[in-house]
Length: 361
Image (cartoon, rainbow, N blue to C red; front, side, top):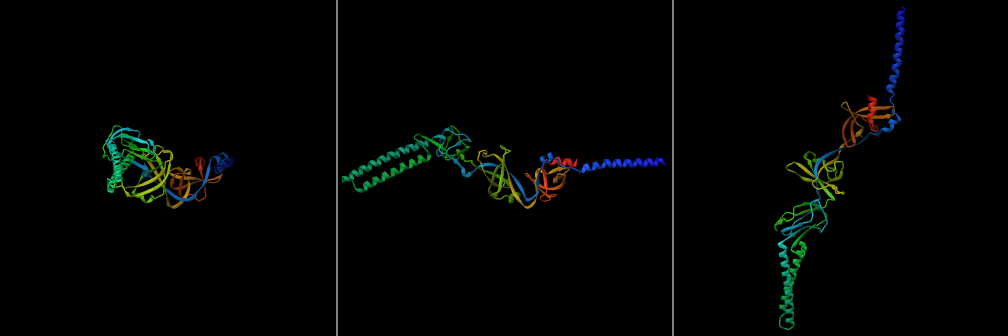
């Protein structure tokens, strides 16, 4: 009889010992509490309901504002003696771009000399006619005819002078090509010693002001309905990948490109620092609002683990819940939640992984 009694007593002591050991462990497992140091390292933000925003990414290129671009054509043919500017140079209005020696200018100078000589001769004939009239040796119609010749000669001289002014001709047989506006040389089709024909239809230079530039981007046919005038646009370029340029949709064209079946939209951008240059490739992001509202939390607060999305809901320092959520989508620094969070709940948005690992590992 002693053996069963001893065995029962030993079993009782063992059960008490196991119970004493398991109770502190259970209490230790459930008594999680953020320390003061950890509280200083985390940040919390409330879940709020907001309209769902989406974005459309387009590919385009930078072009100069066509309303501020002037093509410079040669008014005469001849031999290009000198070219004063290069592609990309900034020029002032009236600055010399090129010098052309032209036979047409020499012919205009000959016409100018003839016109001036004709005017002098007509004026002398008028004086003779007036003297004869005073001497009763000529009639009034003769004086009137001489006056008409003077007027014709003056008109011809004025015409030649106007041509000289338009062409910018000086006292030599050269034609000076000048900049019509302040701006950058964005196209150059002339070199020294080039021969220009008088019927040349090609422009020599294109001068453009690029303080404002356009971005021409293509919109797929399926996305045309989402693009509206005035939409805000963010533009990035390969040259400045970490910098965004702000603009807005200035025009939506009405005709699709027959080759690409895409619609062109135009975005106007202030080019304050002249960083954007014509023909640069650009990536355009247009943001628009969908007809629905969802709860939003910071995108950085989302934890992806075991093919699911979680957030850490903070109630108190010792009451933090790991909550599975259904992520509708993320856009920028905002995540849209379709299920799993209630409005106003505090979500840990900084160092939430530390808390998640402490609670779930």
